[in-house]
Length: 330
Image (tube, rainbow, N blue to C red):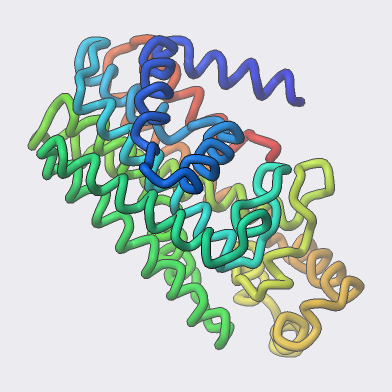
């Protein structure tokens, strides 16, 4: 599985390999600080980076729309995105009391919450200043809207978790803001960097949003999977997060079963046996089937947008990326 993942990532990166190497050097530079402690922590973060899917979206979109060429604004956009994304992960680990990130200790686990919050704030400010310093105000507007949406989505989820009254429409709004908005920003930034004020900026914002929606539904499905995927099952239920499989099961259950489900999530969400029973019932009620159907619908809409553009290595990589979003195993 690991070899397969590496192979897919390498295929996606191939048309932008040179740009990604240069970006990584620029990104390291963008994280530098005069405070030694910040530099130690950011060095730790950078050396445990993930697949860098978000900057890849920036470069592939730009090259697709600009005959295989990028410019300095494209590098600026990719750096802004990765700084903001990294900041949000640091803050998420504090909010979620999480002490591991990609198999390594999180920043808050090693340096405690106070320092982790400050590091996240530092990275957020670095991201915004990167746009301001280059006077790329359109890119600044795109990412500022994204940061606002991410915060609102997180708070909306917390508010609704307390009442357990999330409808399917509210669920889509939460994941649109929490997850899809940042991926939408990647693609709209890539477009804006080479085609500012064009209709492509909005078109690729929509493309990125659809990819992000599919991505988050796939993440939610992992809660009903097995240990192989790297995420323990039932975590979302334990945290009282109302995901699409559970929402569908609730909406399509008789009243007695609905009361049992709500009671299980409200009052027995830490009981492993009860959580397993909830997972089994959601599967039986076709909640997973429904979520997969919706995920594939978002994927198909994203691919339809790419279908409007001529064939190229960049289009091929974006198609691979969209399919990877729904096919990944972790």
